[in-house]
Length: 285
Image 1 (tube, rainbow, N blue to C red):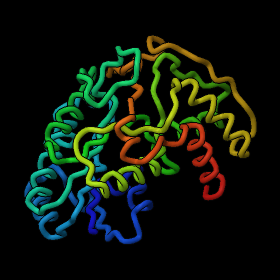
Image 2 (cartoon, helix red, strand yellow):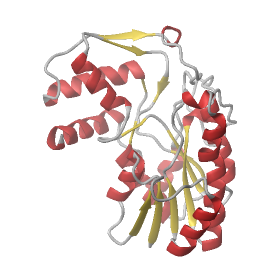
Image 3 (cartoon, rainbow, N blue to C red):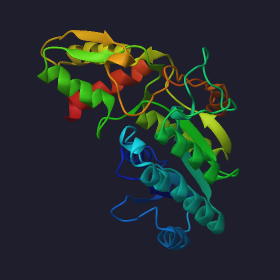
Image 4 (cartoon, helix red, strand yellow):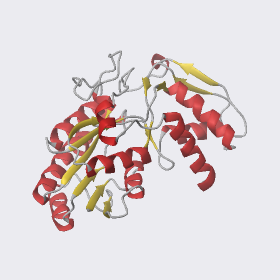
């Protein structure tokens, strides 16, 4: 099996490379080697590589910046997905595309099913929803949320840094969702692709928390691992206390029932995967 990974230097792209089956032949590209907004470049690259699977791990993820740069976000999150879908189809390959919980408005009181009606609140959410449509009916589209990894820019690494630098941290407590460990997501994508998965699915770690809960757990695990010298107060605040250009869903827990049936069981709890990542950082720096 040959796989093309675009967005290969991002946290999910790196995880896809690291968790690839031993039998897979991997070709990984990032923006410095393949511009996915260039239709001709995408068509030529996919035709030359002739992959069986195309993983799209590339995205415009600057949620607040997208409010003033929606055209740029749309080019990466939607138009480029259409280019990848067309090129994959021409090569007889399967497209695996990753989307987001931000396609929902957060007004539900129960976890969102894959077939619930989207209603994005932000430019980022709108462009990611457009990307789902551009991926096409034959693609495997997996929505996820709150992704983090041992490397790259993410909430866990940011919290570790600010907890070491500041006398206290203030974290939003009224946005509820589920963290997702990138290596776990990557492994699930490989499994689902290998089982000929198609259509819309949801994947996150198990469990539910607020950003505040997540931050508290990060500090606890980091203290136990010796990554932090001392605890600092973690202060819960409301979304209104931390205004941002983009509106975010207050509740974006994803129902993963259909995904579990493909994977053969539930995902690990987010706290277990957090401990795994903290241990990785302790051992590898």
